[in-house]
Image (tube, rainbow, N blue to C red; front, side, top):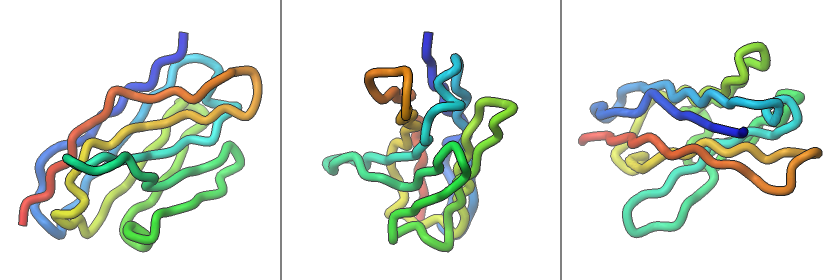
Length: 118
């Protein structure tokens, strides 16, 4: 059974940092590009960052230079290091697994709230 469990969200002041983690159960991790998405109130879910199984990364323009996505294949975990946080980063952050083979759909975590106060 595939499960994605996020942690690390919370309340932080503008300019602060947080690190999100997403632990993935099952063999899906090794065959998946992993991503972080976010959804603010009243807005659509948007891409934050992705990382392939080979380590190639991609970022939304709004977070480039501030956020870093990484993965630890031995721990089936993907991270999102968020620095220089801004109030507009406030959202629920979701972990996503996008498998290349062996699975018929994407999988999502339950989300973790990040709130940045001004």
